[in-house]
Image (cartoon, rainbow, N blue to C red; front, side, top):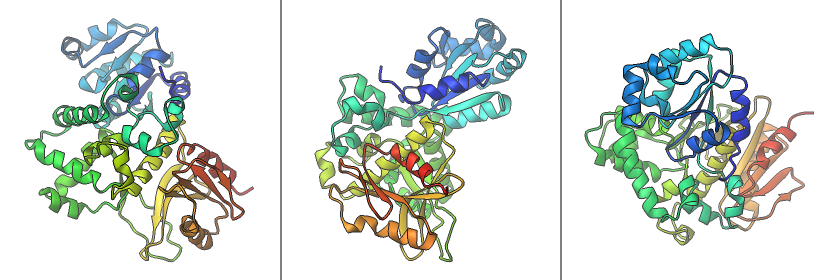
Amino acid sequence: MIKREAETELRKLAGQFKAVAVVGPRQSGKTTLARYVFPDKPYVNLENPDTRQFASEDPRGFLDQFPDGALLDEAQRVPTLFSYLQQRLDEDPVPGKFIITGSNNFLLQESITQSLAGRIAYLYLLPFAASELQNKLTDDANAFIFKGGYPPIYDQPVEVGKWYSNYIKTYVERDVRQIKNLTNLATFERFIKLCAGRTAQLLNMNNLAIETGVDQKTIQSWLGVLESSFIIFRLQPHHINFNKRVVKMPKLYFYDTGLLCSLLGIQSKEQLLYYPLAGSIFENMILTEMVKYQQNHQLNAKLYFWRDSAGHEVDVIIDNGTNLFPVEIKSGKTITSEYFKALEYWKKISGTKQGAVVFAGDKSQNRSNGITILPWNNTDVLWQLCTDSLPK
């Protein structure tokens, strides 16, 4: 088993809260991690029809089987169970009795909010980060981008393209229908592919609605479906304007670049060398790596981008509550003066002294202008740089 960085946080949360929900996309390793950390807890898979029927029809009898707690997999499948689980948790002060996993954040949060608020902690587990795969990675960023981070691709002898095409098919036909009663799955699949073509770009829902052939309200609803099942996320613009008009639309990103490449029809890592959206896909990968580190270590800092109406833009702003740390993402392997223009502009208008550039090369540098250059597979250093940049 490949060691997960989130393991430490999962153990901490289980020692402090009565229950822990491990949430993330299907096949991200939630069950594997939970069973590894809690090998003595009984494991119950609520995807099993017989088990689900028992839990739905007789929740008290079902929970009576587990006086010392259990690991409940895909718990969102039995939402009525949470009300009965609440009573068990209130009656017993022992922390970490129940570990709940789920791949549908919308349905799971809806159940937890109604019954277990204040009694449960969340841990979001995304596919492998590059830092978790060091022994399985080369220095080729495109190889990691194409393969993505889903554990089965590294654990099993599977063809990457076929695995992702089946993942998409299963996701649309199974998970989406749990949230929305879609009548035209082909239109929804077209919608996902159109989203893929907009990765790392401003999200214009009106244009997306026109191309998909549905109304804007439907697009908003479908984006919510993709977000709640950990396919996409939206990066919000930072509100600070420095007396300039700033863009208010979010940018769209995918949680996994392997899935993104499959949706775009990319069939090999070599194809990325000439693909028109290669720069946007690389940016997607770096931002997702930052999000993975943030979630794996339960960091409170928030991520934004900044862009004004004149086109000046900083790819990522790390906001830790007391200062703003700018990050530029460049898909080239050769450092040029162009890499620093956005950061120098940001430093000038914001008074910031430091920043970072993440690129596709393999060397780190500390420049005299306060800018640190980092290779694509070393983004975890960004969080330390952000802390180091705090006013002393």
